[in-house]
Amino acid sequence: MSSRPHSTNFRPEIAKRPLEIPTRGSSGRPSSSSHHNTEGKKLTVGRDIRLAGEIGSCDVLVVEGHVEAQIKECSRLEVAEGGTFVGSAQVEEAEISGKFEGDLNARRVILISSAEIDGKITYGALQVENGARIKGTLDYVEGSDDGTSRSGNSAAITIPRKSDDS
Image (cartoon, rainbow, N blue to C red):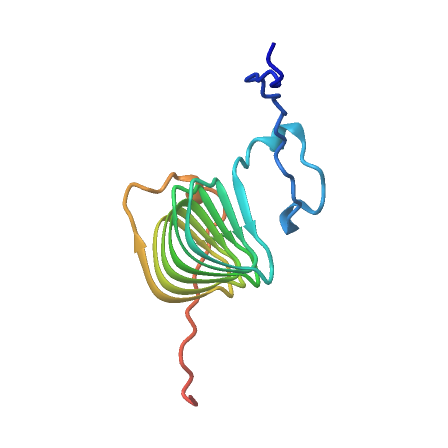
């Protein structure tokens, strides 16, 4: 008889539960079961955190800190007020409340009043709130507008003129 312990290939399966971290938008409320799977793979870069590199295969990237990156294969980019994104992003939808520097290519772009943009935005649908600042270029791509932005209230972009005293 052998005195060695018997070896098996048994590996217990432990059910994996997604980590739920409340963000400013969730107001600390627990997610409902219908909302549970809508966000999928979400990466949140919190305040006072710096991240650099390439980000891919996430459904939602929320930037509350400082991110220098290239984004590919992400569905949604959210730059929160106080957050900064520097680099390039190719996403389905972007909502910018903070600073964005670089190239943004998105089917739908929403610029909140606190947004500061420095770079190029290529878009299918664009919504700009009064107060948002854009320095750079806007490039509309024909055929990438899904039509959702054309319903509802229309908006205007106001560009302040230089006064004679400046």
